[in-house]
Length: 85
Image 1 (cartoon, rainbow, N blue to C red):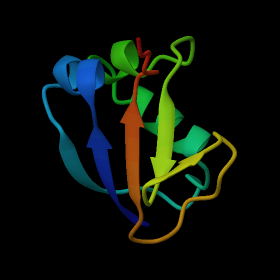
Image 2: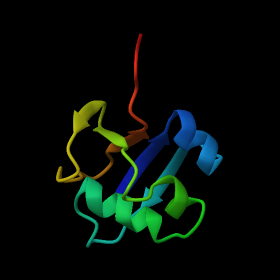
Image 3: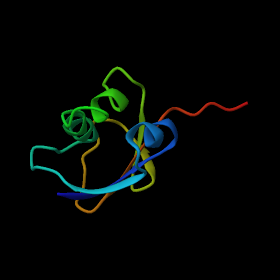
């Protein structure tokens, strides 16, 4: 499955990139699977996207849960929680 990944704020800084086109294996079916797949790449991926960190995700510009199924050609955005004031 082909996906367009986008990284924002501290995630973008930690990874050193803001976008990436990627093809994932068939076993990557959900947002959580995708995050796990990216972490397996090693550092800096493992450090930036570690499962213990709170990271928000959007699928095609709509906020989604980690259990959300991926779809072919989707845009998946990762970003840290945002606080306002």
